[in-house]
Every structure is written in C-alpha cells, then in structure tokens.
Image (cartoon, rainbow, N blue to C red; front, top):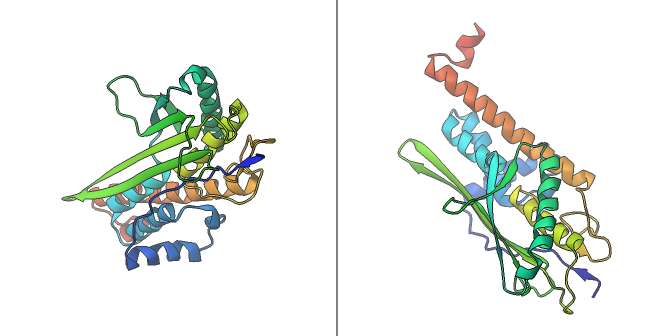
Length: 255
C-alpha cells in the first residue's frame, strides 16, 4: 500500500438559505485562495464582515474570533493500548505539526498541553484502529465552531477532536514523518483549510514515501489572506466600538 488518504470525515450541519448566501458573498469577492477554505469558516468570515458593515460590532468580533481562534489552543493527548508504547514518537510527530503551524501563523497562535482539571479545546488521540469509516484514512477530525447570543452578549466556543492512525492498513507502524503529516493535515482543518487532491501538499493525501513537511505556497497564501481579513474586521470593530463608547462615529471623527 503506497498511499493513505489523509482525509477527514465530518458531520456537516444543514445551513439556512441566508447562511448559504453569506458564504456565496465571500466566495464572490477577491479572496485569494478562497477555494481552499472550509465553507463554515467562510460563513463566519462573511458574518463578521456583514456585522461590521451594519454596525453590529460585537457580532463581527465574535465571528472574526471563530476564524482566528484564541491566542493559545490548549490540547490533551490520548492513546489506545496499542499506541501507548509509542507515546514518545507520537508526541514528537505532534510537536512537529504544532511547529509547522506556529511558523505558518507567524506565532499568532500557540499550543499548550492542558494540565489535570483544565479544559482543552483540542483532543488528539493516537490509535492503531482506523480513525474513520474510510479504511484509507490516516486521520479524522470533528470540530464545532459556535457563536451564541445571550441577551446582548455573544459567547464563542471552539472544540475539536482529532484521531491519528499509528498503523498502516497492512499492519506496519506509521513513521514519525507520516504521523506528523497526518497531524499537520488535521490541524489545517482546525485553522480553516479544506482537503486538497494534490499529493505533496499538507492538505493533500499522505504519500507514505514522501510525507509533506511544510505548507505549499497556495496553502500559505490562503491561510494568510483568510486571517488577514479576519484581523482587519476585528481591528475595525474594536476601534468602532471605542468610538461609540466615547460618543463618536466615523463622520464626526473625520470632521
């Protein structure tokens, strides 16, 4: 067996017609690499843009945050019985994946292991068993991005469950490089990228002979533009909110 498709499966919630139009609005813009971004992340970006444009700055901030996530993502690691003896190798592979994304995101996001009794947004489980219904899958992820309005206050929550395979279909153990590619791929979904069909890319299928070790140029471009737009919305919304607290608006400030 030469390749394992590092393709995740996920439950996709039904979207309203309004939400579908919101996604289409972003797709219609000049978004470099938009074809590489997950639809639900595009939806949050579109809702952030719409909120800012209509003066709903708290909503804009909440949805922009669902694109950017928090500055520190806390994670927890678990192992099945067969993978536990390889804990050191699995941790090495995961740390390589974290380093890849720290660099790609220019250290805007860091990863910290959650201590006992502390909440983790991300759970990573290493297991010998197939992580999904697709026997050729090297990794699987399920995630949830939620924005809930309580009165006049928005609450945001992100959580993800990643499962990484440690044994190939034929029974041979996955190497550290192969596990690192699978982990990097699933983290790519965490930050908004969708699957690619191109072998050699992080978001593409895992080539067991040559696992990818860095983002391709188009992947970097997509994630950079996605986050740039979300940061811009967040900055403008924070500034507009401060002006509002001081009794100013854009027109008065320009006088």
